[in-house]
Image (cartoon, rainbow, N blue to C red; front, side, top):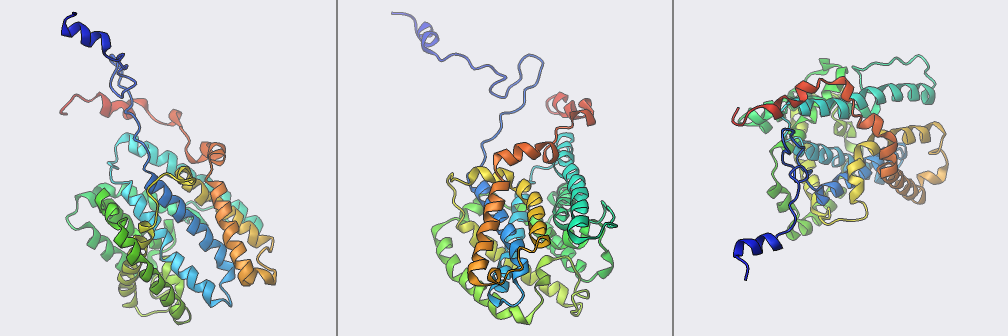
Length: 377
């Protein structure tokens, strides 16, 4: 009978190379193994981005339809807050280190510049305005979100240091509604007014998402959404839904100054309630659309060309489009187009623009400096 040591050696599995397991091999540090994607968040991002497309498709259908306007109001109170909260949650580890800054430049700054130029030329054609200037300081159409994400992520270390980050963010958002002189540079009104949702995402933990996904929350969400829809239908002719865009001050919306802070808090509370109801029904398992959650930024930036093109070619002109059958058709087409734009073939085609490597543009020493630092430094 062989000694115990020989038996263990004989039956032990083959050794896994250290490099494959995320450890250093020799003197060369290996990249850590990538974490598996969370199906819940991919599902949530996909469903939220589909709502974005549907909301944009409903814009030409609002006139003369109180029901569409009510649904539009409900969607706009939900989709961008949900998307921004999730963006904040995934920005919790942003530390302004070289690798983080490099990724911020390649996945936010470069797409911002490319799509700002692309949308300017496209708008020149669709609007018949050949003299429209390219301005990187005035985000056009959908590119405001990239400018906002760049600013929010750069300030993440500050929010992580503050003792009461969410109240401070709410105060900043409220003050922004009192300041019509902020101007259009980088769409700062939106950046500041949507800031609390991003900061909230930074503060959330996995257990908070598990809490809203409980069965009790799903059941409670049904009367809440029904009440919100009824409230949206009632309030439609009584207020200006432009408040939901968060891009104007109270004065610019024709309201007294004190409306701004009040609406900031009221909309924040309403939107968070709807976001919680939305997340309660997001499936946590892998579904047919889970993989599409990785391509939501592609769908977001590309679907604007389809929406503007549809308006340019008069596809919203026929009378039947403004009847229930047409409105349902527009909704389904918008969802299908967004789904197609999030697929892997589209991502591969546009990866050179939305996720460029740009290794030539960065100093290798700066990116590797943190890895080379001795333990405990």
